[in-house]
Amino acid sequence: MADRMKPQSTAEEIFDGIAEAIDGIEVFHNQLLVGVYIRPNITSGGIHLPDQTIDEDKWQGKVGMVLKKGPLAFKNDARNDFGGQNVDIGQWVMFRVSEAPSISVNGVHCRLLEDIHVRGVISSPSYIW
Image (cartoon, rainbow, N blue to C red; front, side):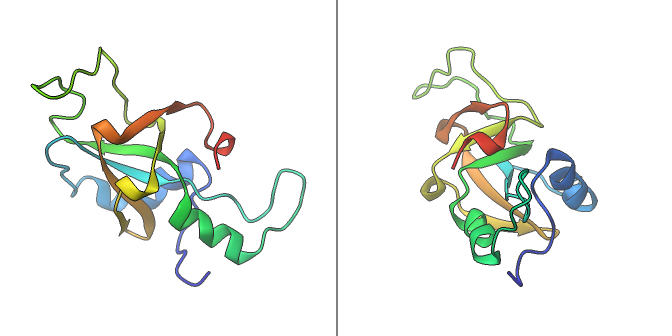
């Protein structure tokens, strides 16, 4: 797990990890920047997860914390009507991994996705795998 640079199992860890860089990032169009949820290496029951399992979250994780939104995110247009639905910075969202290219921002594993690829909002990222 050499390339996992910062913990990302809580909203605080994700926001703290990206804090230095977030003001220097401008997301365009209808894109969202999300910090990917990566499970902690010890479960709530005290079981130590192998590095390979944790690293898999980085590449297959389907939940992320909304960090930035482009100016056109969730705005109705000729092709899309969001029916009043929207997401806020700090909310956990679900998405398909194949629709969200991965990037690393200040050591935090993130993904960029279009607003139309958000599948829903979830109260806890640990509900989804």
